[in-house]
Length: 173
Image (cartoon, rainbow, N blue to C red; front, side, top):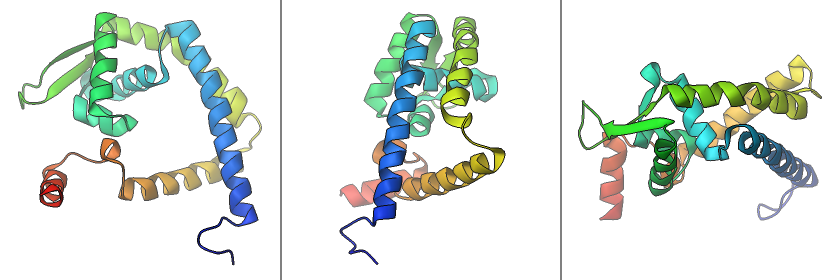
């Protein structure tokens, strides 16, 4: 067994492979999004999450939690998307302290333009070399790791429920 402050050779190899795949895939995905939709990776994530949301709307805090992005960064990205006419922002009818972001028809149009190429890049670079069993293992492992990381997430990835706010308030005191 390796020392806790070191990674075993297998762990190190897995880590390097993960970071390399992540970097190479993200680079190509970002290029496709810029070339076809003039979108950053984060902007695409925001539009895609809104496209999947009921009614095409989500609260800003829910978007930030879902894409693991700071609230201030998300505010800037939402402003850029709003200026392009891809989303609208308005106070939530249920809670005026919350801002609701809604996908516009133009935003749906941009998603429709970028999705075919996005899927082709992801399928070609990530899934083409895997069989169905490999994809099942990858999904299971990444879901487990994601759950582990979200059990103690950075602030931008944490939930913003009442219990979470109460714990943060007590911890910050």
